Image (cartoon, rainbow, N blue to C red; front, side):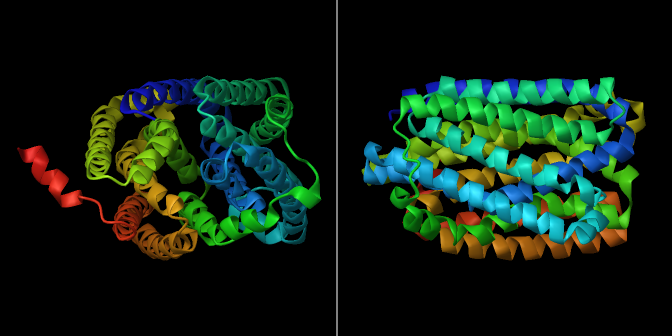
Length: 422
């Protein structure tokens, strides 16, 4: 894929991601006011738990879809999609068993009643299958289908959540049920569409389970560590400060997430372009790749700085005057999300070289570091310490991943910097 096509598809992905993010973002002022800080904090924990279980349920095997397509050929796509779906269904059974067995301890640290935890498992399985469908569209370079699915899910989730909160007696439970219903409907439509477009092989005897498990199993520690880094701040904050401060934090984090949503959109076009540059294995392609990486980093930093500048006006405008205490949190979390976004563009090198085990080591190391920093700063400084620890942990994760990725294949990282000066 040439640079012009990469930029064109990147623009489409960016448009879709920004629009899908805009739907829940526009509802944030209303949900924050309707639910209040306490219930809004529980919603944040629900979303975090969905992320944790989603990583375990599918073993991140959807990441093998583009690898199989580019390495084994288009004919492998149907078998891989069938295998990914089968693994996710088995994972869902395991997740339901775990939340039933450990409902009490999970309720203690998440504030989600044990009898509602089955919703977490269903939402997690549904989100993984949506990610698998998106991976197929990305691999086939069909950005319009990708963003249609993305926007449809965001709109349906928002509409159902609002309806259940406004017209029933539910609070955070309405948001949880809305997510489960939304993922169920979207997954059904997406896989019906895919089954018409590609010959999905649903027979277990033909599932490429060995390849998928060999790819996904080493990634499980990475996925769990990455999700832990994305959610540990909320659980630490729950134990340190309680539900009200958690609500401030979740509101700030949701606004800051606009940075990483935009970066994720760009990353959808980045992956096939990156793989093409790495496969070319030429000095020209290498220099182009490095320069584009530095340009991406600069754009992310500029976006975070811009968000920091408008924070005093943005936070009370979006969430209301009762959330004005979240202004300093948003400044710190804007930097954290920018560095988490920068991580995405260097981690892709390790996926290309199939060094998923090494990526797991990096992620576990970063998770331990972030937990220690966040917990200590949270105990000493409260909610702002948790936000600061999150930012420091994100910086460490990005730099460590970049360092390890750079060792997999020599690229002109320093030569490209010198060329910018001239």
